Amino acid sequence: MGYELVEQLGWEHPDAVFYPTGGGVGLIGMWKAFQEREDLGWVTGKRPKMIAVQAAGCAPVARAFDQGEAASQMWQNASTFASGLRVPKPYGDYLILDAVRESGGMVLALTDEQMLASVKDWASQEGILLSPEGAAATAAYDHRIGTGFLTPSDRVVLFNTGSGNKYTDVLAQALAV
Image (cartoon, rainbow, N blue to C red; front, side):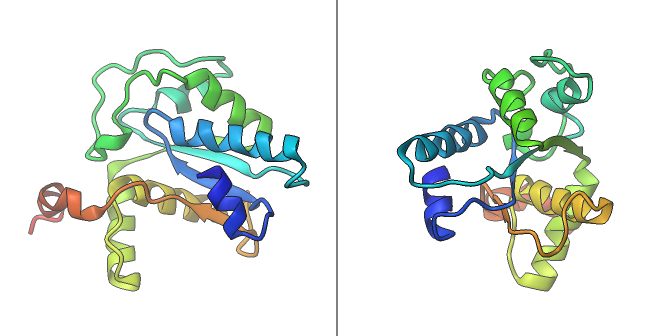
């Protein structure tokens, strides 16, 4: 993902990457790819801020980030309708935390209600049925714009790591359809 992302952006890094983070291997892999391209001399300049997004009902990395810990602790009673984010103890949590901190990024935890609102917004405004995980990234982006952490002119990549079509039963229940 990291190689493809930068290639599609004309061999330049974006300002930020929002990545739904359950196990976090995508974020870890991108960070490694950014380093490899720099080592090869293919890309120069500042790497993007890495923003890992978790569900509030299962946010071990967000808690570790907020508490300044080097690794997460097992999240008890994990609960979220975004099954890809329901990872109580990511194996590479320390690598996620290292990448986020080194990049000047952050880890956010969003509620299922925030994710559902973003699913509805994107479906009605853009005609895109996001996965709950992807909706976590879009909701986190809106939140970060609202706080001034990023500006609307920043070059940002949001990952939708699944299809809302895999969640039709969950979304129908959440929307009371």
